[in-house]
Image (cartoon, rainbow, N blue to C red; front, side, top):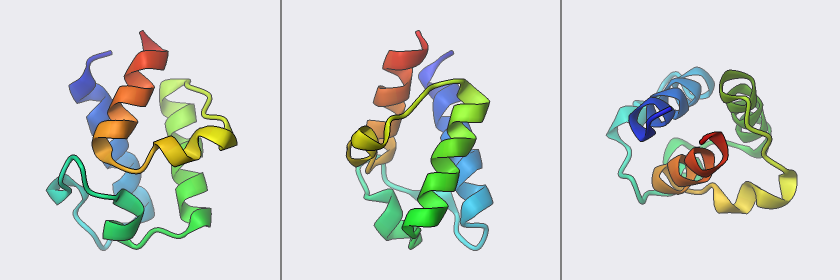
Length: 81
């Protein structure tokens, strides 16, 4: 899976939990939760959706590594390949 495909999966997931926003306009280094005003419960549902779509387990201890689009793509790419 390419980084572009991973990014697309992330943006699709964000659009589902924050339908009033436009995740495609996020800066790659912008804090996603802050920018889209995503609470902890929605973020957890977003990560569950990514797990289901991409098959990557994301332990709760590593949630802090997933603040920006760049961080998410790098984290997931390292675990998919």
